[in-house]
Length: 436
Image (cartoon, rainbow, N blue to C red; front, side, top):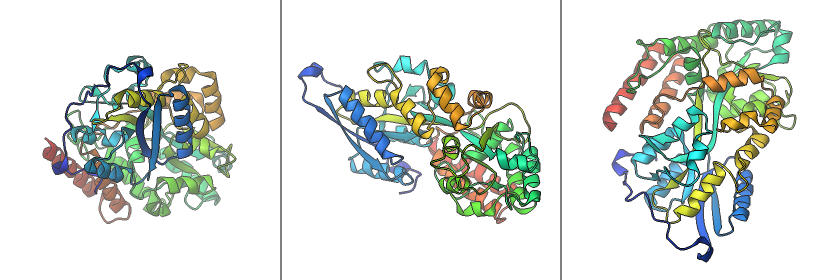
């Protein structure tokens, strides 16, 4: 099934606030909670689920990892068959559609939620809600990061991190001139989940917007930022020859693997790639990779795109109490009051956390430094990160995929930047009208 969930097949769930029963917990038989997520490092999830069950012996969790790239399709199939789990991961790009379909229930007022919310970064907190109700706890929240090989850049005489696209162009040309890399900038442009992350980040870092608050497109003419960014990318590939055309055949994960194995000098990727790139067990260039403020058309002090992944409760779960305790543990605190799961993910894989207080945690500060972060740059980028304006629209996912295709057409010169963005804007208008 298409990632765009068929509007004709929505089945709105009945009462979302399901009763949990009045029997004392100690008197109940063990509750079975079915739990699923996309298969990113499932052994870490299994270990955390086991720890949850040790702290909650009256709950048994049956965890099933699903294919990462096909997660949305597989979950939609489970919803349509009525065999979905009690709790599961949800991407912010799907939340609006899943709520509109009646698949997810709100969690407002559940025990401990208000305390968690007070400690969540604003852009993450915003992503957990839809139409005034909260639907999840944070699996993780992160920002898109621009990074470069500081050692190779310095060999080419680039001593200052580029923070504008013009500075990035000049730095890449300097690297190219020395022969250190034929194409100094490496980026994956193959269509995949969230494949617009760099584009959004360059627009935000430039001080631009793609949509207004009513989700009406501002590009390509009312706000020309997106047009300027796409024109720069086209020139980077075809005129200056600093952006590797091989990236058209690579998705984000493949581009990451090529970069950590030594190709390219400049790249962008999800936040957990920086610690991976500086981990000698996972990268050939460990210790050499630094992050910079995300480059835009001008240095206006803005940040990149930020996003959130959620743990949510199914609208039809019959084990709401046990399922809530699970996603409170996974997306919040354990029985000792510690953000155990969030810290565990960050220590092991650099998966970003959503809790402001962890920025002051000495253990996390050390992990940031070991990952290669300049703490001042990190603080500025997280503080200025923005959530995508239309990410909660139930049509976001369909628009995202369509726009990725338009950008690909532009990068292979099958369409002009203006024509591609006009087609994208028209698609957004049509989808908005269909959902109104």
